[in-house]
Length: 241
Image (cartoon, rainbow, N blue to C red):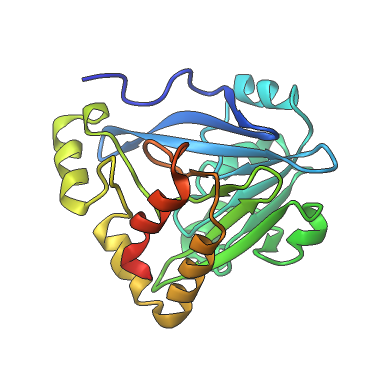
C-alpha cells in the first residue's frame, strides 16, 4: 500500500494564488483516512481556515508565515472537532459554522465557541472574495465556499474521491461499497441519501455550485480535482441535480 495520506503533512502547500491545502490524517474505526484543510488568504491579508486538520504548533507557525489567522470555518455538521484545538490557541479568531451546529449536544458539551452562522455577513467579513452556498439535507448541512479570485471551489463531504491504494483493505472495500472511490468518487451513499432528503432546495443549491464552473475543486477526503474540475464536479454531483 502507498502512503495513506498526501505528504508532506501538516504544512501548507500552495495550489493557486492565495490558496493552500494542508493534508493530514484521521482515524475511522481505527483505520487511517486522509483529511484536508483548505486555507484562503483574504483581501485584508488574513487567513481563513476551512475544515481545519489537527492543530499542531508547527502547522500554526507555518500558516502564520503566510498571514494572520483571522477566520476558522466548521463547514458542515460533521467537520468541527478539530476546530477546538485551534480555538484553544487562537481565541482572537472569528469562528464560523453551518446553521444548527452550535445547538448539537456534542458541540454544546464541548464548550466550543461558534461566533457566526454561515452565510451571515461573509461578504463584508471576507472582503467580497468568497461566496458561500448552503446545501441542506436531513440532519446535515454543508457550506460550499467559492474563492472568486482563483475560481477555487472548496467543499467538505459533498465530494469524496479516495484512492483505493491509499486505504487499508477493509476501508478500501468500504469506500468502494459506498461509491467514493477515485477517479469517479462521490459522496458516500448515506451522505447522498441525507442530502437528497433536502428536496428541491438542496438540488437548487447543487445546481448553483455546478454553475460556478470552478477551475479547481478542493475537498476533505481523497484526490481533489486540479484538472477538468468543472466537468468532474458536474459528474460527481449528478446524483443531486
